[in-house]
Length: 197
Image (cartoon, rainbow, N blue to C red; front, side, top):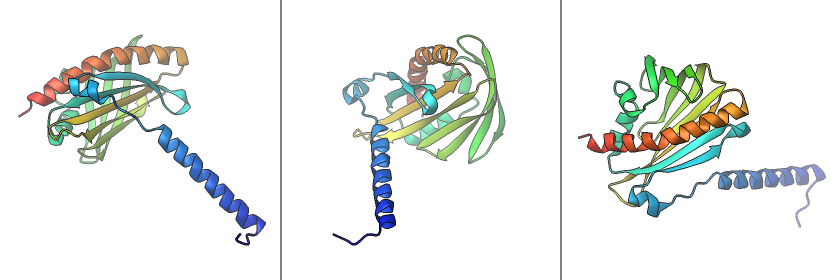
């Protein structure tokens, strides 16, 4: 057995514990997909919780389109309101290759909301994230991911959105409303993208 000092032994023990905790955390965040349902064309909507139990929604669906067409649609602010209903009005505050700052006026479940999001083009063609900059909500953040599938003609879209309006009860109502709209949004987005030349 190696001759460890007490301090070195405790450091190794701490590092091993942190490694185990990291492994458990990463593994618990893995998502398994219902491929038979996705291949049939189903849109899967799930309730999820983020950090600090912020209510969220995950939507997963397959799209028969190129990665370029999907990405172009996700950042097509001229046609945004045609695809994503419930937006009363929106304004592009700033936009460059890194991302965009967008102001939204939204018809929410209980009231109209106004806020500004920063949409970060984290990995163009693969991952787009957003976070609240200012406005009515306490917190709103989420992401779009475009993932490969075993079918070279299809890509998987994974949408996650977390909303905290300041009180847990109202946030849960917003989550329920988001679930209802998310399925329709996914179908509209798929139709829009698959019709793009």
